[in-house]
Image (cartoon, rainbow, N blue to C red):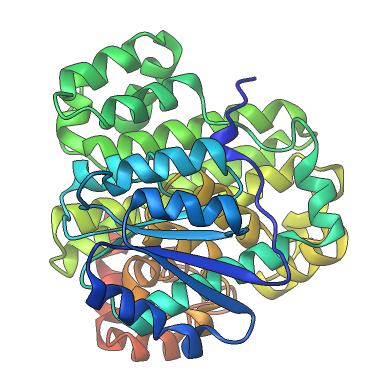
Length: 401
């Protein structure tokens, strides 16, 4: 199994030092003003360029690095690549004004989170506090024991890392991406099988890997690779194969429904694809836990609260925390990580992050019977979508039939 130090485990420390890097003095002053919003457990340091940032990290233990992408002399991507190699335990957050899919995907090859300019101070502070809360959860002794064994978590497959490396090259194209995937015939066949399945919901037949990239985009393709790899990594380790099949079918179904609802709301193509990815990966932590012997009876839990209680008591950590941890280390977009982390605790969802978690929540629950549904109407009202319930339900019912 490939082991890459870029995905080294990250655990909480008593004091969290955040290093902000930007060449604009005004921006740095705004970052310094975040200290009261972050609270007493945080300390804030700033640097005007990449070289100064590395000097700070040589002298100070830094848990989170937040860097602008466009800087003279040493761009943010080069800085964070240095940080990744020299300080693999530090979380890396990229801030950029670009928003196209390929650009975001490239940024996430060297950063754990991507935030688009302009970033509201409250939203940034909330993101940093959630990162640290997750780190604290993973510091529990049971969690450490579960996650620290040599084969506890899958490293990203070689094909995924090669694809990530290709994304950092400006001259890369769908043909280059396709050649990387086609070097793994089994993965190629599995990807084509998934995207041509009824569950995926395409109206066209995909015949080759290059066409797959052109139709679904690199964002979705990378996520499918991670999902398939995680499933294949853990499935042989579980005694309950039926549970794995159920989890995989649920992931595909939730993903397709989430994208359907986003499309009904006239979200952009990219936002619809992000909803698909969030639905596909929201329960990825359950694949990790399903390989544990104690998890065999999880399917008997009647609702989400019972499931989370079962996980906490038996294993010391929930699938939501593991999912957010894993997706963050793998460089998935912030909305996807938030969905994995908070889809069972909707009251904690920040208002700026309602997409795509609202569509994943609705996709999971809207067609269930009134007895088994856990649809949170208060959450729908807060998101301004309560009046869309009937339309969504009818559309998903028609799709299912």
